[in-house]
Image (tube, rainbow, N blue to C red):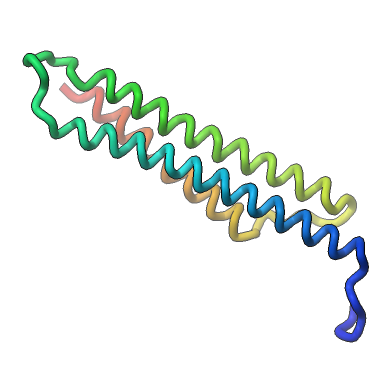
Length: 128
């Protein structure tokens, strides 16, 4: 398409579909990031409270809850990224699919940060 040509209805429909998929991925990224951040915050906040009754395993329940929340955030982020890739393939069959779009790169980066948070909380629980 040259500068003087108007985009076809099909091209505009594809563009709208791709933008809708990006918005959906960003919404899932925001939700997943909130789960990861909330799980990590719960663990770090309760880590500094005095243990109740002198129990050595006083932080095991909050630690498990934190791991569940962080893990759920990571899983949702990965599933949303896979769904985004599939939607791009469906939206424009026969056209090359580029996953170098900013929302996808952001989702992958946030998933990696979630994995680091998960590993940190896991490692903290194994210390004597």
